[in-house]
Amino acid sequence: MRPDVVQVQAKQDVIALLLGTRDAADAGRARLERRIVLGSVLAKQLAAVLGEVVRNHEAQTGSVDAMPAGRPGGAYSDADVPPGAKPLFERVRALDAAFGFEKSFKLVRKSMREDRLILGVPSALATPEALLGACRDIGMPPPYLDAFARELGGANTIGFGYEGGGHGGVYKVYLEFWDRLRERILRDPANREPALLFLGFKWEASEGGRAALARYICHPLLSVRGILARLEALYAGRSDSSSLVAARAILALAARRIGGDDSFVYVEAGEEGNPRKSFDLNFYKAGLRVRDLLPALAVLCREYSIAAAALDRVEAEAGGRAFGHLSGGIGRDGQDFLTVYYELEAL
Image (cartoon, rainbow, N blue to C red; front, top):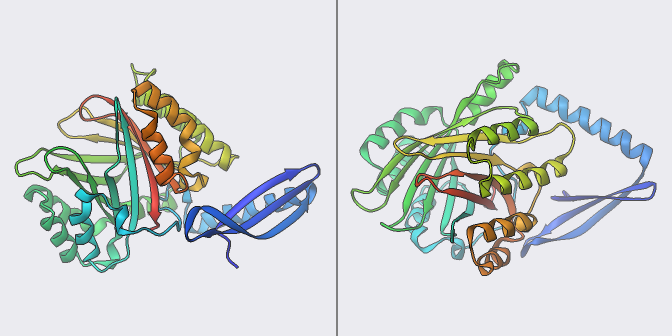
């Protein structure tokens, strides 16, 4: 038995470890497989030993604090693919390579946008020609095709994204350079200088639509306190922004789950030619579900004048899914936003 769900319970002078397996038919349910009961002294000894093992492992392989991958989650079906994203989905599937699948919902004033997805393909599983062909087939502008081809060799993962809306929606392609950053951290752990983690190519599907190039800069190995400081700086002059208030609450929740001195991967993004200024926080390691965010999101929906029915729909469709990462800030239209990403299939 290999558990994929772990829960810890404390009762009087004993600690119980509950190990289970997730229900394949319902990602929000799990079956208890083993219960291990420890005295408090033995539990402390186990915690110390596990901590030492993890630290030694990270010294050998690099910290997982910045790992932008999820964990095995629930299966998906074609019904999970928004209608506007089906051409992209079929094109990625035609690569005949395993891929991760994330969906997301974006909250802005008076609106919740749910027709969004990202499909992540490891670069080692497809040829450069096939990946370029996929970009070409979904209409990537020629200047972006050239840049994509130049940078592809250094990328370990390619993300294919779609966001619905006017003008046929927006296509997005991301190059991820995590391996490059990880190697730098292993070589020089004291070097915490920001580094490019993602390069994002975005364009409207309609002919002649707008396009934008986004750079996602990782600030490696920040503490939770350091992340909060970066968020405050990002929202300079707008510290009462609703998305910042929600982000603080979700960060606090996730930090309580992991405890200790652990932290999360923090990235800041900007786009050429528009005022977008945003953050992205990877929360997979906290083991949260989308439903765990609902109290913070309910407050945000009231601030944004979003009907409660929209959040009810999210809870019904995604409440049991693994919460992946959170982005927010000031969008390309200058408006406050927050986006919640959740996992359907791990990369």
